[in-house]
Each structure stands twice: as structure tokens, then as C-alpha cells.
Image 1 (cartoon, rainbow, N blue to C red):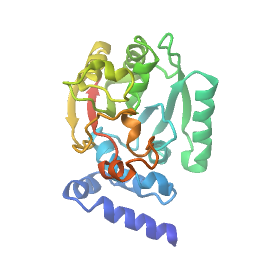
Image 2 (tube, rainbow, N blue to C red):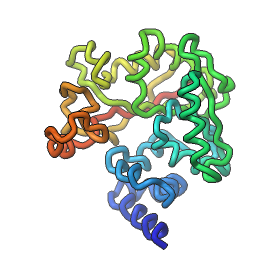
Image 3 (cartoon, rainbow, N blue to C red):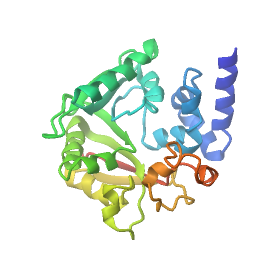
Image 4 (tube, rainbow, N blue to C red):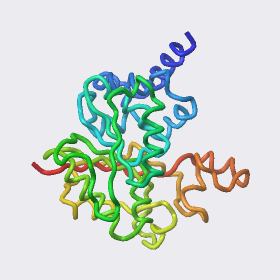
Length: 267
């Protein structure tokens, strides 16, 4: 009863804005997945910053697709996507081929129980860009707040991974990228430490791999975020690296300003 009430409350919140109401009408499966009462409360509290219904709808996600999520991390989006796809589609969690990364991925997928039935784990070798996701099999590849980590690994890592995304997608398939946005006027050296990236950097990586930018959205924009913190993006919630120092100020800003970019693999 409590879970049913929570799900109903979530659905009401999702439909509170005109945009969300339109999306609810056109994407009921996504709305239901986001409103799933099995989602953890901690994850649900991030919805107001991450706008999962709007974001997944913008990327054209459908319940019958084969979808690859690169670097699920703690499984925030996995908690929505794996149940969404488990009956008619296929969720693939993709991460580095190190034992630690694969163990974390396995833990996330097994933790979902029967709600994640059919979800599988896959790997990618950062040194070569080779992945065990079969070429030309994915309808959608999504990555949320991860491209900056690829930049940290080394100068060739991100190009290799974007090339792998291109290979695993079907012609006409979608690559969706969300990441922390660094203003174009800032020093590019900040991309090596701050967690923020310029839109132009992501665009360059994607186009070099063969993708074409077809749309972008301000769904995940946050004009309060000035991207100029001593501890980078992790100064803001949910990490709040400064602890109690200026905590109220950072909570008032909210999560980071993010670009939301939709690319396609040309047919």
C-alpha cells in the first residue's frame, strides 16, 4: 500500500508540468519505469535534477530496444532502464574490462532481481577500444556524466570508446550523451581536473567517430551552476566534497549544469 501510494505520488509529480504531461501521454512505459515503487528513495530524490522522463524521451528510448548504458556507476539509470527493457527489449550494461569494473556491474545487475531479467553485462578494453557488444546490434547507446572520466584516463581513451559506440550501434542508431558543461570561454585545461567538459569537446569526439549531431536539449541545464569551484563539479550535490562548508549554498545551486546531446550513426 505504501509503495502504491509512493508510485502514484511520483506519477503526479512527473505530470506536474506541461512538458512532463505531454511526455507522460506519449511515453507511458518510461513514466511507469520512473514511477516504479521499487526505486530507492535516494535515487528518486535526484529526479528533479536529472529529469529521467524528459531525458529518455528526448533520446527516443523505447521499451522494445536493445540499449547499451556505458558505465552505469551506482546504477541510477539502470534502476529505470533495466525494468523498462526486460520484457520486450534488452538492457546491456557496459564498462571497462577490469575485474573491479565488471564486479561492480555484476553486482548492480544481480541486485535488481527479477526486475532486471534479461539484462546482461559487457566490457570494453580502453587500450584497444574493443568491446564484446556485437557490431551493429544496439538501437541506443547512452552515457550519463561519464565522458569527463574518459578524458581523465588518457588522450586516446575517449576517441577509442566513442569509436566503439559507433561500431556497436545499428545504422540510424542513437548515441545520447549527458555531461557536466564547461563554458566555452573557459580554459580547456579545466577539463583535465574539474569534471566539466566543453560542448565542443564532446562534439569533436562524436563527429570524429562518425556520428552526426541531430538535436540537443536544455532539459538538464542549470543556470545557477557557475562551474568555477575549487573542488570541481564534486563540490555540488550529490557529492558535496566540502562537507558542511557552504553546504546550504551548494544545495541551493543543485546538481550541475549539463549538456544533453543526441547523435545518430548515419545510415
